[in-house]
Amino acid sequence: MNSAPQNGAPLLEVRNLSKNFGAVQALRDMSMVVRPGEVVALAGDNGAGKTTLIKAISGVYQPSGGEIFLRGQQVSFATPQEARDKGIETIYQDLALADNLSIGANIFLGREPMKRFLGILPMLDRKKMADAARETMALLDFHVNRMDAPVSNFSGGQRQAVAIGRAVYWDAQILIMDEPTAALGVPEQRKVISLIKQLKAQGRGVIFISHNLQDIFAVSDRIVVLRRGVQAGERKISETTHDEVVKLMVGG
Amino acid sequence: MTTELSSANPGRARRQMAADILSKYGIVLAFVILFVALSFAHQNFLSTANLTNVLRQVSINGILAIGMTYVILTGGIDLSVGSVLALCGVVAGSLVTGADPANPALAFLAGIGVGALVGAINGILIARFKVTAFVVTLGMLSMARGATLLYSDGRPIPNLSPEFRWFGQGFVMGVPVPVIVFALVFIIAFIVLRYTVYGRWIYAVGGNIKSARTSGIPTRSVIFSAYMIMGALAGLAGVILTARTTSALPQAGLGYELDAIAAVVIGGTSLVGGVGSVTYTLIGALIIGVISNGLDLLGVSSYYQQIIKGAIIVVAVLIDRSRHSNP
Image 1 (cartoon, chains in turn blue, brown):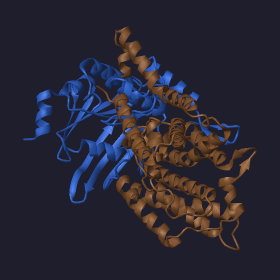
Image 2: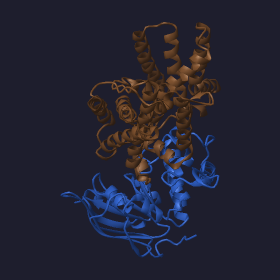
Image 3: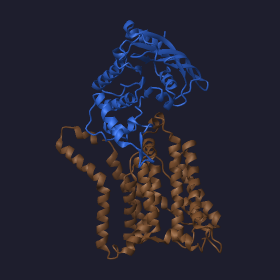
Image 4: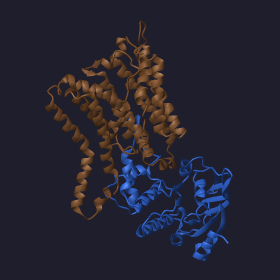
């Protein structure tokens, strides 16, 4: 596994990305880099453009200008599906889980595995879904007794693990996490932080949005601060302080 | 709810388990009790003729209710099914009346086609233009009824060809054709919902449309298709109902949306979407059919029947809500 962050060629590079909504410029000339095994935190006040940025990277929004490079190759995504096919997986604030479905169904949501019934009729491969759910969750050291239960039965941290498990199952190289710890109690926050460290150790790149500076300083290698749609600064975590980051966020 | 299973209170857990089982199979139990009670209450209830009649009655509502299950699973509703049924009935009927009737298969397909078309209009307005399903289909309820009256000049279309009437009155190996059609619709709907990707998407859209969309599921197409399927099934029900009666009636299907929704709701499918199945809808349709038939046999006035049916829907929703709400 790649455990030498900072040195590798960039996994993801964003150059001068802009996004307008009508007359409103939500993002302007944003540039950033994510290397393998690196956790990059995005910070900024509400409306600073963090969510716009990750949605532009993950194919939800079409950028109004700028370029995205994946392993040196320029890419553009018309849909989130295309981004996902290239290994960029996003875990949204609202978890993006279908609460009424099982872990397996959620892992495969939108990418359901099929088998041919009697050699012709395309059918859902339910067994594969159940097996994948069990293996993936075991990989994340996550145990529930009822794998077929709808995920609405699980706690916030468990559901976060399901969302991360989905990304891991699909071998995402870049995980974008929007406030993964916001809705959780303290023990569950720790669990998610350790999950992120695990992803990092596996050589994946993580973009991590959070309001919680404690969490950011606990797992990130670098922090990129946005303010009103532009980059207000970028620091190595080892070379900055809470105070400096806060100053960058509020400006002045 | 179920999360409490993990709490360290075995008595409570056991009670919760019992409640879970009851909520899952209570509807089956209710049907069995109803069935047995009516067997004792009236001597003719169990007769072959009566049960055949019940099944034929259930078939029409059952076909509508299956389509309604799809629509409600996506988080929508279709109030227009009764009117669409009537429109498709008169269109099909108009093709097979008089001295030179068309091929019955053509009329059959025309009925379904008109239904699918109307369903597609509903679907486009709801999925593409984001108008509330309630409003769109309420408008369509009126428009389709108006179109029916216009098309038929407000009069029944008599003298339907005997070949066409086979769809409503025929038998195959002793089983009425409508029952066979309903059984086929049920089996296909069941398999599609449970074993295909499309079925999974229906649940996903109803469960969390945002996550479905970000997961790359074509949510608009899924919603659109649910209404189109519903329309086609309303057309199918219209053809069969018309073939059962001897003429195509422009006032057919009045209030049928209520029975269809009732079957779905009694079956425990959540009106919020995402939770439910056609199997329970089938039982819901059987319960409604048996109640209507039983009340008829016992000589209860149809006025009371309407009150009873409406009350059952409200009670079913109340029970459902207490089952799903998190304290």
